[in-house]
Length: 134
Image (cartoon, rainbow, N blue to C red):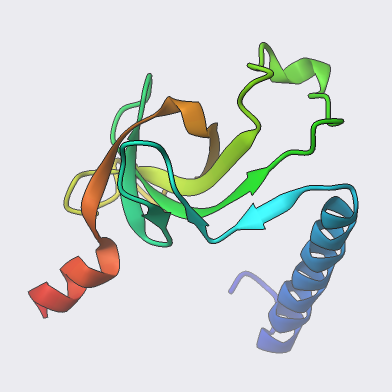
């Protein structure tokens, strides 16, 4: 690691996890709902590791979790146009190829999309594909 010890790295990870937990608790208190599974009409449910396509984006994305915004929430100005009917966001990583390999070099970045942009959901999950390949 670049100039830091393992204990310093662990302390930094723990501090980030604590900060994330505090932020999530504040959002839940404001009416946000967090989901580990998301069911979309006419599609397979999104569960952790399942890949899906997004309209307007290249490649496949791996589902991480989802959230539903409270009706009182208004987006910041820098978000651009937001459909007031769509209140569910999806957090994921990507893009990947259909076999789960990252597109480009390095680790795929964290991304977030509105649920209305999901165009296709893969049948299996990455964990199931890895199990079959082993």
